[in-house]
Each structure stands twice: as C-alpha cells, then as structure tokens.
Length: 239
Ligand code: NI
Image 1 (cartoon, rainbow, N blue to C red):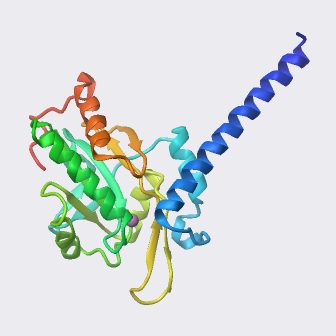
Image 2: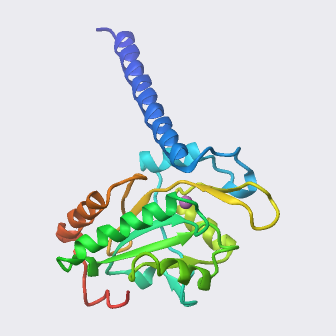
C-alpha cells in the first residue's frame, strides 16, 4: 500500500474514532437529558461558557485534568477544603436540594452503597460528598435538613457562586438555571455523574447517572483493594 492509501486508511480510522466518540457523547448526553428532563438552551452566564456536550466530552475523554482543590462550607457551617478529606476515598455528587427526582435517586443509591459496604467496615474509608450547584437556595442549614434524610455520613457543601463554579468546572459539571429567572421557582439542569477521588486527592473516575447501588459499592471496593490508593487511616481521622 502506498503512503496515500495508508494515509486514507488512517484518516478513515480517525474519522471512525471521531464518529464513535461523537456517538458516545451524544448517547451519554441523550441519557443525561432523559434523566434530567430537557435542557434549556445554554446561557453563558450560567454555564461558565461551556456547553453540556463540551463538558461531557471532556469528562468521557479524560484528556483534560479532572477534579482539583475546593474551598467550601459544609452543612454544619464549617469551612472545608479538599485537603480536609485526604485519606478518604471520596464519592462526590453535584446537585441541588430542590431537584425533583434525579438528585434524591442518586443520593439514595450512594447511601445504599455505603450501607452495603458498612456491613464489612469498608464504608469508613469512604467519604460521600454532595456539592450543591444551587448555592443561592442551598444554605448550610437547608443542606443539613436535606442530608439528614439520606446517610449520616453524607457531607453537603455549599459556597460562594464563584467557588461553586470553580469546583463544578474542575469536575466538568454542567449546570444552568432554567425556568423563571426571578424568584425561587427555578430548577437547575445539571449533569449527574458520581465522581471517585482517591485518598491522595487524585481523580480516579466517574460512574454514570443511574448506576445501581451494588455497582457503586463494587467500584468503591475495587479502589479500596488497590494498594496504591489504600486509605491511610492515620491521616483520615476526620469525616
Ligand atoms: Ni438533580
């Protein structure tokens, strides 16, 4: 085969890869939309100028660094940064308390996964975090009320708009208000992946929306069993 032929074949393969990646992205986006209800058109001020497709693609491809530091306030009103949670395997979910059904379903699944692990003592190595994408309504006291209906170990985090935007963007989370611009009657469209972060703060991967509790537990267990990310209990004293 001459170089032209090889070239054409390579570019056909690249096209195939691009197409299959596009299919994967649109399939995931369709799934996410299905789970979230229809997306409203992206408003620049709400989405940090990134479209949901671009963020989901960045997450699926894993080409850009994912995750990073945060400086937020927990549901007890205490300042919490990412380094407070070193030594724990983090399970992070972004959502908001007024979410009609997706967020409660996912938080319930995470809670059930922890209950499963709890029976073998593995849950202690895991810290579930719920980071709000609706800091205007999700005050610490409101979050405290909300998390109490899920898991006793669940820590909810809120913060300044800019801090929430920063951590959401770091995790490639898309979120945007929809519905009436004024008042409290709005909803927030958002992507709903569960993120796994290692005991050293390193991003490990994500679980797609709708992952069953047993699969979440299994993913956690797999990471706990890897010696390089085994929790160091001496540094992981805090919840
Ligand atoms: Ni939600």
